[in-house]
Amino acid sequence: RNLKTIPFGEYCTVQLTPTYFPTEYGFNAEEDYDSLRAGDSTLVVWLATEILPDCILGVNGTLNFGYYSDNDIDRDPEDNMEIFIDHKRERTIYNDGCYPASCSVEINWASTNRGIKIISRSSNRYPDKHMTLFSIWLGPANDMTVLDVGHYTGLYGAGVWVPYFFSNASCPGCNNCAGRKSDRAGAYYTFYLPDTDYYYVQVQWGASEFSDRSYVQWDKEPTVDSNIMMATEADNDQLLTSGNVWLDAGYHDLYVGSAPDGDWWVLPFCRIQV
Image 1 (cartoon, one colour):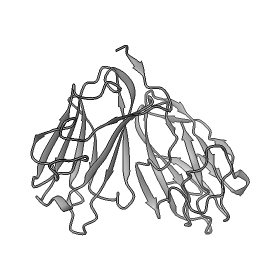
Image 2 (tube, helix red, strand yellow):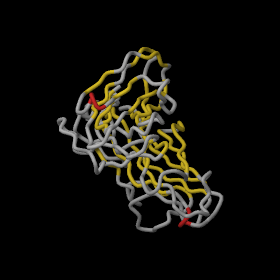
Image 3 (cartoon, helix red, strand yellow):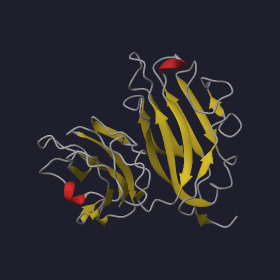
């Protein structure tokens, strides 16, 4: 096929089954599986190479990995999964902080890439204490847009609800906003910045029936005095743009949510672009 970039609005799913994502070492928790979870093993390796679907091979895009940590109080939070693209380790995810809400990470995928390998390491052999990787899909090349705010990397404070039950946003496409009734609550999203340069952030804010105020900050939880953007009731259903910030190339986390500032709650947010 011709090398190309996956168009916006199109996605390609990797089937996490024995046929398309087989174990190379160790055992999956289920023999006939559709998600990756270590079985009676402290080390499990899954590998998908040339059996990846045609809509991924030869295409530039962004791979999204969705996962849950286990909810057993005796799980080992240091258990982890390493994600490799070809032979390079890109990310490590841990068995903690991602239940009941799932977490996700995004990794750039180039048209020249050929394989995905997952290595699960655990201190125990109990499948019901192991973390689960439940989805891998390829989306558009990372122009640094988050259309689904439920695909966060992680949470801080009280976290967020997606969809937010109290949202009454009327902005276009704002039917799945994030929010929370708390004055310290939010989510963070990981972006890969290709160059050391100035970057700005756009956030589509929604609205709710409450008095809300939210903040945005790079690489740390925002506060009243440390943020690149503040959104208030006056910004209901508005698209706001931050000032430019100088950032090094590589992975950065963008935090969005409320901060302790007099009991203002999260102003619902619906889309993010960098």
